[in-house]
Length: 258
Length: 322
Image 1 (tube, chains in turn red, yellow):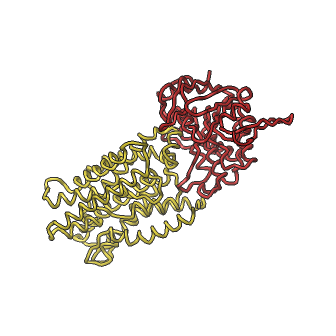
Image 2 (cartoon, chains in turn yellow, brown):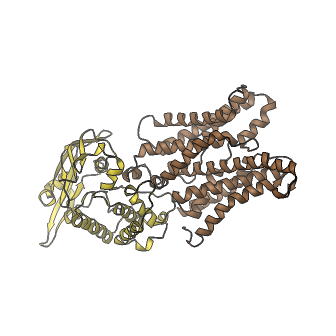
Image 3 (tube, helix red, strand yellow):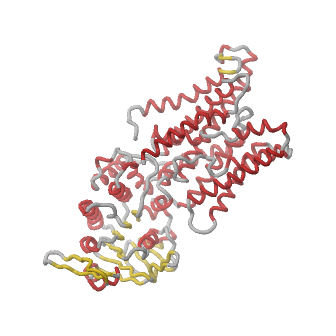
C-alpha cells in the first residue's frame, strides 16, 4: 500500500494555482523529486502533503487514511518535513535540537531515553556533525544549520519524509553525503521521500520518480528515467536544456535561452 | 554558550535554597533594623507574622508568576527579549483598576478589576491581530504594542482628570508595589491549574520555540496549542498585576538569566525561573521597604533600576552573538 497518496488534489496559494487534480501514489522505497521553476509552488505543495496548508479540493492520504482527519501527533509519527528555512532563536546544544525530533513519540510526561539520545548522536554523526553535538545551535554556518535541521527529521524517524530543498547551502560533498543518507533511509527502511530541489542532475542520480510542476496547475508524474528528457526540462524551466551523455553518465546542462 | 555540566547540581541547590533564605531575610529586615525572627518579643513577632511574612509570600508568588509568564511570552513571540507586558496586559489591568478607584466601584475588589482588564486587553489584541491572513507573531506583537499605548493614554487621561488625593496611591500601583499585596485563597485554583498545565507542556514549549510550522510538523496542533499557552501566560500575568501592579523587568530579566544558566529546555527553565523570580522579588521588595526606611519605595522602581542596565547588558551580548 502507498505510504502517501493524493486523490484529485488541487492546491492554490494566493492567485497561484500549484496543481490541479493531482493523483499520485508514493510507495515504500520510492524517492520522489519535485521539480519546477521558482515560485511555482513546490513549498506549498509539500506543506499541503504535510497537512499544514489547506487543499482547495481533493485529499491527501497517509497510510490510506485521510490526512486532515488524523491528529497532528499521529501524523508526526509517520510523516516529517524539513522546512526550507530554519531559524534558531534560543540557545540550545545541537544534540538537544536534534532530540526535539522525538517529541511526537513521547507522551506529555515522558523524558527522552538513553536510546533517544543515542539516536540523536547517531543522526548528527551520519551527517558529519558529531563534533558539534555539544555546541550551541546559534552560531552555525548555513550548511551546518541545514544539516542540523535534517538531523532533527532523522531523529523523528518518519516513514514519509518531505524535504524542501535539503541541499540548500551545502557544498557538493555534503550534498552527496545527505542524499546518500536519505537514499539509504528510503531503500533500506522501506520509507519514502518527496524532495523539492533545483539540481536536475541530483534528481537523476537519486530520485526513482519525479513530479514536474509546470505552473497553472499542470503537472506530470512518473519514473525518473521515463520522464526526464531535454524536451520536458526545457519546457519546465523555460530555457534550453541539453542532455550530455559521455557513455558512463548522463548530465543535463543549461544551453542558453529557449 | 552552554555552561559546563558539573556545577549544575550546585546551581539547583542554590536556586532551591534561595527561596527560604530570601523569606528569612524579608522576615528579619524591617524599618527598625535587623532582628532574627526567633529573637523577637511578642509584638514584633506579630509584625513579622501579620505584615512582613504575608507580604514576602505575595512577593514570592508574584515574582514566580512574572518570570514564568516571561518565559512563555518569549517562546510565543519567538523573541528572547519579550516580556509579560508586551501585549498590553499590564496596561489593561492598570486602566481597569484605576477606573475602579476613580469611579468609586468599591463593591468590586481591585484585583478582580485588574484581572478583568488584563483579560480584556488580551481579547482585544487577539481579535484585532487575527483579522485576515495567516497567524503571525509580528502582527500580534505590533497590535499588542499599539494597544498598550492606547491603555497608557487612557491611564494618563484618568490621572490628569482624577482627584489629586488619590494620585499617590495610583502612581504606586502603576509602578508596581507590594505593600498591599496579599495572596488570597481564590488565586490558588487557577494558579495550580496553570502550573500543572505548564508541567505537562514543558516539552511542547521546546518544540514551539522553533516556530509554529516546526511545532505543527512535530505533532503539536499548532494554533490550539499556541492559544492555550497565550491564555496561561495572560492568566499568570493577570494574577501578578492584579496583586501588585505592573512590576517591570522581572519577567524579562529572570527568564533571560536562567536561560544562560540552565539552558533553553523548558523542563529546567520553567522551575528555575519560578524559583529565582520569586526569591529575586522578595529580596527586591525587602530592599524597597528598608533602604530609605521609614519611607517605602514602590518595588517596581527598584526592579527597573536593577533591570534597565542588566537588560542593556544582555541585549548587547545578544547582538554580539548574532
